[in-house]
Image (cartoon, rainbow, N blue to C red; front, side, top):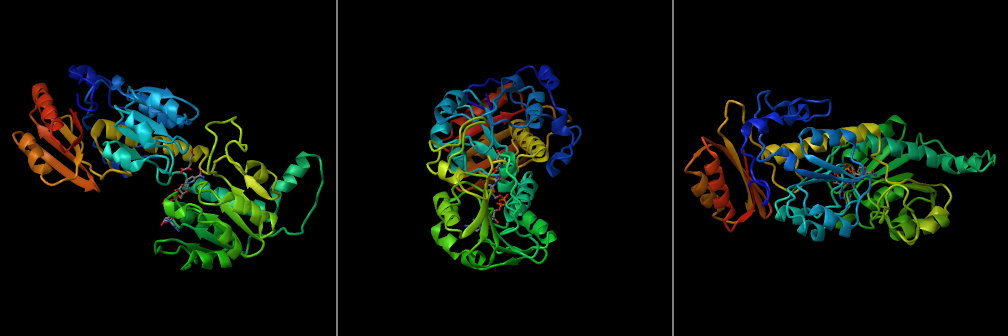
Length: 463
Ligand SMILES: NC(=O)C1=CN([C@@H]2O[C@H](COP(=O)(O)OP(=O)(O)OC[C@H]3O[C@@H](n4cnc5c(N)ncnc54)[C@H](O)[C@@H]3O)[C@@H](O)[C@H]2O)C=CC1
Ligand SMILES: O=C(O)CCC(=O)C(=O)O
């Protein structure tokens, strides 16, 4: 009844309680958030329907830690190693209540329109540019990500790449693999004493700043926000200032309209001759044909790319000109490191992300908490406990228009509302209320009346 339009509530409370809670939901793990640690031991697991009715689709080889947490809840979990094309997704997503993806799966408005049962999306990564966040919010679909569990992995990769580029290690290694001894010092440098220019001083940029300074580098950074410098790092006023001063330029901005092509021909012209470029953010941030020209002219002495405008769906797929017209030209360059979007691909990062995002999905599905959601207001209520057996939690996601709360309170106000919280984000508002002394008939009545309001986006009643 409550969570999605075609799911019936489970009537047998004893059986329902027997399927839950999982250890992961109530017990803190090494990666659990503050919120998890504050869930009381005797928290009552709220499940509106048989947990085995919840269908979860996990794409892109989501880590086993995440798969286990979702399976332990009793959900039906389907797991695929690669991403799916838009048409394949449309077919699959129709039945699904929860979907987990990484950076490749595009959850466009066209796909989400077909996702009639979907309540929540988990991005098992940092970036959320692959999801139409606004469209999802307008449908009442929450989106969660893992904001910093792979930041360190990316920062370490960049440190390694700077050394590799400065020493032309990729080329030397390729030559040795081909059987050629080529002992060179010309054009090879230490990174100590050089200047790193970090574009985007967020989680990754700041982490990188600390590591680079420890390697003896001077750190400058450019960010649209005024951010406190770590160590002796220095914020510069403009991107041009950074380009003119840095020996190593590295991009750590999100994919948004303002960052599309932010490093192009004009920016390469402003760089120092012999500088290096690294991009492990998103493939649209650097104009790759312009980079190819800058490397051929010798302006850029080396580059490392981890991300591309179009990336293959899965391992074993080709990275060729059918995907990106510049692929062959790119592959022919010297002192160029190209990696298959592995910035966050470490055991540590993937395990932590699996736990963090899966727990957020469970909290949302079972308790309605939007803490950490990237597209809905953050609303959380204290967990109901086993001492509150006849309580129900009403979640009403609605259009943020005047007069809604009055209408909702006319419906729930006849009951004893223990606690209630509401917040809005843009055009969408999220209301959560705990009501005591309710029976199955009351739950059905509440649900039906809330669903009939014109402001309704999605109603869920958890009990
Ligand atoms: N290669 C990989 O595997 C990975 C790639 N990423 C990418 O890295 C990006 C950055 O990650 P975080 O550091 O965690 O993000 P963050 O959100 O913590 O930091 C991004 C920073 O960029 C700044 N920024 C935004 N627009 C800007 C602009 N036009 N000019 C200058 N600065 C701007 C923001 O103010 C913020 O400080 C992610 O959005 C994701 O796309 C993240 C993880 C792994
Ligand atoms: O590991 C992945 O699939 C994506 C990593 C990434 O780009 C991110 O976290 O934003």
